[in-house]
Amino acid sequence: MLILALESSCDETSAAVVDMERDSKKILSNIVASQIEIHRRWGGVVPEIAGRAHIEAVSGITHEALDSAGAKLKDIGAIAVTNSPGLIGALLVGMNFAKSLAYSHDIPLVPVNHIKAHGAAAYLEYPDLKPPFLALIVSGGHTCFYEVKDYTDWQYLAGTRDDAAGEAFDKVGRVIGCPYPAGAEMDKLASLGDPAAITLPSPALHGTLDLSFSGLKTASLNYLHNLAQKGVEVNREDMAASLTAAICGGISEKASAALEKTGAKTLVLAGGVAANSHLRRSLGELCSKKGVDFCVPSMSLCGDNGAMIGAQGYYEFLSGVRAGTDLNASAN
Ligand code: KG4
Ligand code: ZN
Image 1 (cartoon, rainbow, N blue to C red):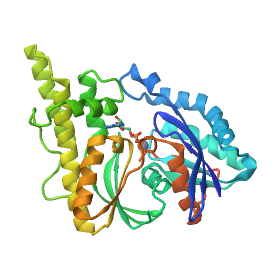
Image 2: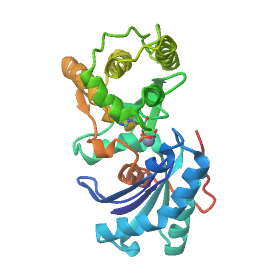
Image 3: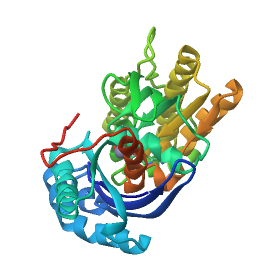
Image 4: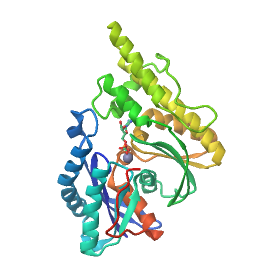
């Protein structure tokens, strides 16, 4: 069946058409209109500006997604839309547009959770992937482990108690002059630096599977402020490499413990920070050591996109999930 999917939870407006069957999953189109350039001058996402930019983009990119898929609305079996979590004003734009299309063309409307959708991106590229598995979603707002019992049954296992890993990359990257969002640039800088150059606290908490990135973020920012006060120029590559080593080390330690605790045979890594080459490598190595299958979407499916919403939307549709015109958004 063809699913038209819409995503507008943060700073990317995206529309996609995916062709989903039990044995075959194809992305027919996946159009992403990024607002990064708009928010860059503010150093982060400005929620009201995000909502306004979504409203300008949503209709055009939906037409583009249908056209490049060679599909018409009459071919669409369901419309999937992100309704949580995210910025309320941003979510409402995609949702309201999806509701109107669904209502006016009598197409079933399926609400989708953005976090589950990040994980579902993996189904699009690993045809044999099936629950149960352990999912690790690492993004600008989330760093969490879930036991995925079934396609729609995700149980929270552990995660950060404060900031997300992406936020640590973005905030520290900003101070060393990386444009927003800093993750991709920090990834490149880290490859050129010495991961042992700066001693930073581990984000892995003792006696629990949970993580905490706020101490690591503060320690990194303090280190940078101290250097600035002394008039010493920071080695950006070493800063990026040391922060990356702390983040990857902490996440890998907890991933190892989570795999042991759950006995999972597959680890799915997804979310914007799953694009990080160092994290992909350390978790890949961990899984091969443990004899666990490792699934991570390709780079273009790690960041926010409509295809992942369509993938999760398909399984929500199969399990009978439908929304009416009273569907609301939820920030958390
Ligand atoms: O999933 P996503 O696109 O949006 C949210 O749902 O949050 O994730 C965005 C986050 C940002 O913090 C960005 O800096 C980070 O993903 N990111 C990366 C890389 N590419 C994007 N972080 C580290 N390394 C990367 N290569
Ligand atoms: Zn996301």
